[in-house]
Length: 416
Image (cartoon, rainbow, N blue to C red):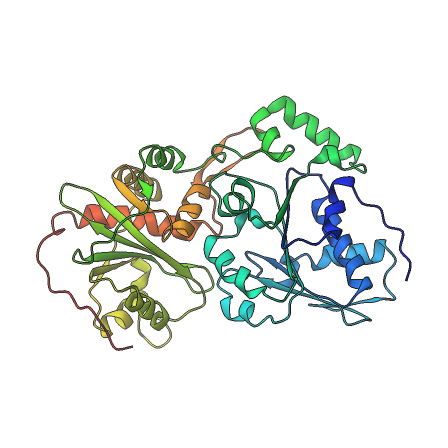
């Protein structure tokens, strides 16, 4: 099959071998469009197995399935590629598969023999997701292609692949000016934003990172913590008991912060864990594997709600012998204020808490793009759960201030 396909000049490297191919930059650059076309062309030249991944994929509509299907039609490749509901097959055995990375470890590890992995919207991918994915794509001469619009220079993907990229990576910044087919409608939007908000323009259209996201709730506190070297490798003193602070979720994320309180008011945030669609047994097992001695476990007030069996999360965990406490109810705004104050005396472990810190940096109030006014409540998204658990941490620590560092009887293991 002969093809005559045009690509922006900056995307020519997609047809040269390299373990990592990283395309980052602003809107309207044609990054995703070009990658989709390149993969479809390579899939015609030889049979390949392509995993198309992103951090969160609740359904196939969250994936690049539609983009690939559109390009198949635009390139008139319908006779070669069969577009099914959740996969795409080529006549020579090429296949395109789609998956979310976050909290899908078993499925990701089951993908054997992947030749090319395309990670789209990679700015949201966490450290734990990269640590799981990269060794999974292990076929000889396999490649990982990464496309994203940068947000913060502290985001895991930007640090890993732009600030200090792997030696076997081709990293290319691609912007609207590199797209010969950049449409007038986007040019008008670009020029309008440049007039209204230069900082936003540089991020959205020129692919520069922001110092902070618009409306970021904890921007000042996290910046201060970074400047004061309070986000670093934190040595864990195993003789000091650990308290955990939870935001309970099933379909949504279940988030847990692990905290030690030290005499003199110092707070060490030593660990973080979150997952979804896991039973309480799973989280208790995670507690056990950490090797910490636990003081108590603070659950949100909805942990007292009974399920269909007449038991609550609080009941289940207490029946396992865990020392459970319930976080007092407090208005969100008051809880955020408490969380800000707490953050000013915290030391965060930069590796074990990386996923939680990324969520805190992206936790923000919604912003009207025209008026630039913030809403009264933070935006509810994938970052909210870690942030809610952090807010509960501050409220609980204030509630339990008179009991910290007093001798208690601590249970160190449980039978699940």
